[in-house]
Amino acid sequence: MPSPKERGNNKSKRKEHFELEEKVIEVNPEHPLFSISLAKFMGYRDSIRYVYTPPKFEKLVYRQNIYSLNGTVFCGSAPQAPFLNSNYDGSFVAGLCQLRYIYSMSVERIIGFFRESGFELEKPTAHHLLGRAAEMLENLYRALRMAVLEDSYLCCDESYHKVLVEEKNSRGKGVRQGYIWAAVAVKQKLILYLYENGSRSGKVLFDLLSEYEGTVQSDAYSPYRKLKSDAYPGIKRIACLQHVKRKFLEVQEEPDAQKIVELTNKLYQKEHKHCVGRQGWTDKDNLRHQKRYAPQILSEIKRELLRIKSKPDLLPKSEMAGAVDYMLSQWEAIKGIFTEGYYYLDNNLVERYNRYISLSRRNSLFFGSHKGAERGALFYSLACSCRMQGINTFEYITEVINKAAKLPPNTDIKVYRNLLPDKWKENRSRIET
Image (cartoon, rainbow, N blue to C red; front, side, top):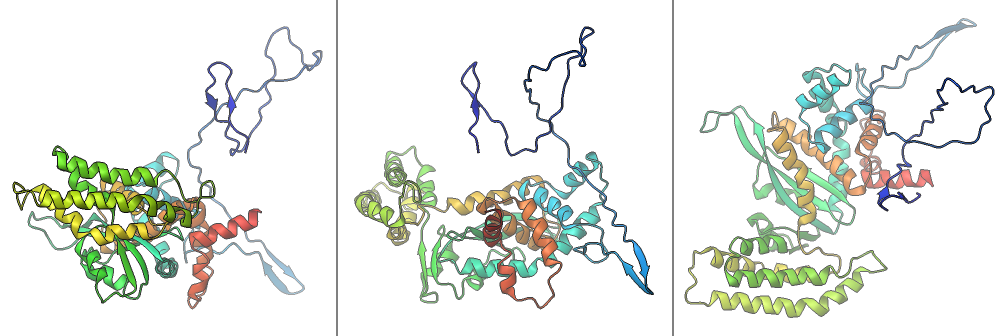
């Protein structure tokens, strides 16, 4: 793609948007003395205007013509609709999904946006379409779960969202805080969100990882710490340095806390001198680099922690004592970060994608039911996996809905595996080349 040209007046760069479809409009002089039939053409100069057209809705009528030939009746066939007895194409549902789960618009706001763009959509219809799509994509979601658990390196976390329920809380409201668990397959760039009646119980995590073998990076929430037990011999758990450092940032006015923060930042400074995948830098190169810088800094941090802990004026229940104990309890998991060149220093990868949950929490306030939250987990899994792969969510969901509609109920799960965002991207790249 051509690089943006430079403007002559101030040397700032102007993006030319070569990705847009171009429409050329011929403009002739308008002047009383001008006649195009008498004038000699000398050339032209272009002026560019970028125009925004609101979403366009089309009503496609497939007029299926019927013919008779030699006593036989022939009739044209319309493309198969993804939903039985429905007039909505997969692209329509994909538009709803993109606005709801990527751009965090509530269904009410989406309906208002559609109305201003020229299409009247009822709220029950919107929810019905999303529900039907979720049912159709359940096998795709199962394939995603299997694919994520095949990755040897997971970043795990959980986030909350309010959910409407029948039972009333202490304030007389039918709302409760439900938790959505997240597992990022780092190598495959896929993410699985999991919702089970809003539970934050470790059972949700343990059921997910019951047969998993690989590395799990997480904060120190108790279910994650239990992954170090003999019940999960195939799992190696590593810590998140940001969670550890955060405890000291909360008391950073104290010089001892500042010292720990500075040393932890030193690990980041050394790590960020190189980036795996850039300029030929490999995982092995990074591991050698870590073995040179990490042991000395970690030893210094450990000495400082033990020094602070031994201070006679340190109150056992103070925030500083809590921060020190927290970091020491995570020490083996912290050292584990530096045993592979491709491990991250923290869990920020999964937390970045959890922001989509946070935005929904602000804009939509709540899921309408546990079923709606389960549906949200499915669509967030697909949409955020698309983001990780750098592919267009709308294009992806449009295609997989229309393809899934044609698959018989007993289709092998491996077929759905090939429809997941990573394989979809590979197939798309193969076609384009």
